[in-house]
Amino acid sequence: MLSMRDIKEQISSKKQMRKITKAMQMVSSAKLNRAQTDAQSYKAYADKLHEMVGSIASAQCNRGGKHPMLETRPVKKTAYLVVTAERGLAGAYNNNVLKYTQQLIEEKHQSKEEYTIIVTGKVGLQFFQKRNIPVIYSKIGLPDLLRFDDVIDVAKTAITLYSDKKIDELHLIYNHFVNAITQSLVDSKLLPLTDIDGEQSADKKVRYEYEPDEAEVLDRLLPLYAEGQIYGALLDAKAAEHAARASAMRNSSDNASKIIDDLTLSFNRARQASITQEITEIIGGAAALE
Image (tube, rainbow, N blue to C red; front, top):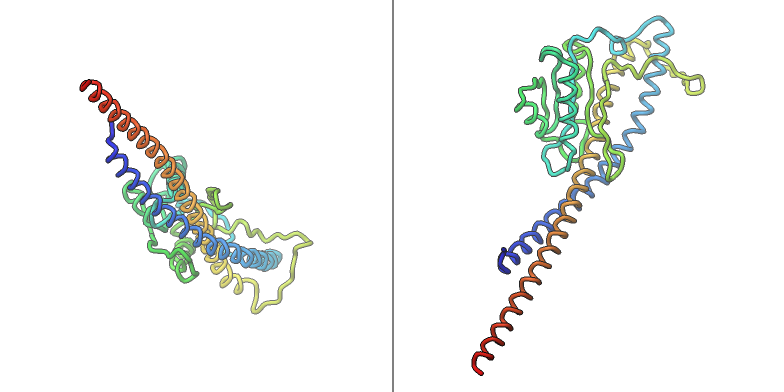
């Protein structure tokens, strides 16, 4: 049984831990507000770009052409762009993505020649390295508040691999920010760009004027669009990461408070038992003197 001194030391230790987790919760909450604003602002831009690219692709299809990034080809090798964090203390944020990716690889591929990994975040890189899963490109050290320049090398690498036919499909696997307490896992096929099929409903069709022609415009625009999709996914994942970490730290603080309450109750009981024992001894001593 713990002595009162041991219980007091544990209470002090848990209080210090609670201060740390509360501070980390406040920091993550502040970062979440900024990341959420950035992700929502970029989504509006991405939706408009998607509409414009779809319109130009539709015009090209009507003339009997189709850009290579829009064409589906036999899949010999698949790349997975997996988004993880630089550190833990974020609940199941990293584990959900990594376990899903590992399970997906085991189910869909028979050999390492059929797939490769592009990973962001130190947690993901270490996970794949320990399991000898092939990583063709990794990016660590991404800041908490992302800018396009921070991820342009990741995006360009992924798109170049596809353009050079070193891969035939590119999947994005990341956590999508739903709200401050919920994140959902996303597995989205980015390349080929099957979500731009060159078809638009009549009520949404917009005519654009451009020079020189659809093919040359798409040659420049589609890689930028794909890069933007990757950037948008990373912004979304960052918001989800901050939300997951804030939630995990809040739960840790609540658990620490519960432990402190239990330890305080144990301390009070031990102190009461000690006082009762002392009173009993005094009474016994007094009775012995009579």
